[in-house]
Image (cartoon, rainbow, N blue to C red):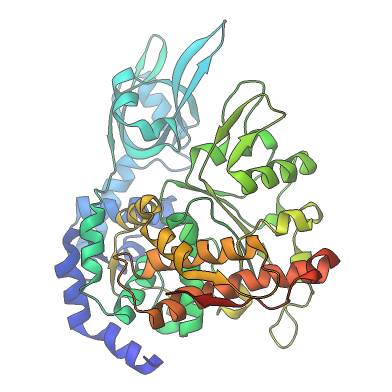
Length: 480
């Protein structure tokens, strides 16, 4: 389908009607959230769109009256950066306070102290009491944490969580797969991009597939990617807004934060989230870089988390590295190999080899208002949960393992494994029901997978003579 036909199909009211009829309340006009001004309160899209559906359900752009109602609710229930002491004062005076906030539960098991506490980051409270029944009813509180309407009260022993109503989407994966049959491949591809918050009309087919590759760590276990792009391409946009099970990091990193704190036994982020994203990695400060890269190499090789053998567990968390790169006057990377833009300790070929793919973000346009969705897509909380549920559907993995084979005299096993994994992820994104012709599979799944892994292989080929015993170009065949 050419660009003009794509523009016509997305603008067609029949497409909007189809999305709304097939997905019902799980669909939302993507213009509603920006118009509500909720994002200015630090609310990610997966929370904001859930709120809009709860407070002012409806279709089409949000009205001024609806926007005012949402802002009034937000002023009462979403604490701002300067509201911490105001809310604490209300608690001190004996008020019961109801707010929308993320809640994280931590467990301490020591001889001197054994307790369960709730952390409420928006309020700067890290030791609130939370009843056993709330923590037991919502296991995600003990992992990545949850957003929800939280009722707080002050007691003699400090702040206590009295009630907690989580924001939750219900995902029926079978119905999600069945919905795919109602759309053409062009329509479904557009729906995926709209649900991410992007306008498919602003991107070529090649750029659309690169944008969709950002979803790979959500649908595929232990997916490791790097996206190297100039500033302004929106590398972190989707990760900030799609799911509470995705953690975006921009601060200092240590082995204890990523893997496990050996002093307390507290597992790190790679054990607690589905995806961990290191944003603008060139600006981050790393404590013990050698320990971090050694731990990552082991984890990326076998999915095992450990530090010095004191603690050991497995995880299927994906890892994404986002880095800015400089371009020449032809809009190509100014530094070759481009991996040289990463911090020095991450340039080891043993680590680079464990990246399944590199997204060439320099081939994407800079993010502008024209690039943002302006019609109906799937609600972010539902969309993110559906993608993560697809991790447990192994039919695409089996399909790719059986059908894809690396050709050549001396196949390199990591190339084959990586291409199979990326192709499987693209299949889950674009063909979640498993119904795909060989032609479409090669075009939308296998070719992008080969391209992303080829970029990794190019870096290895330039950096280390050991890899030059293999063919420079990756070639694959589709077996019957």
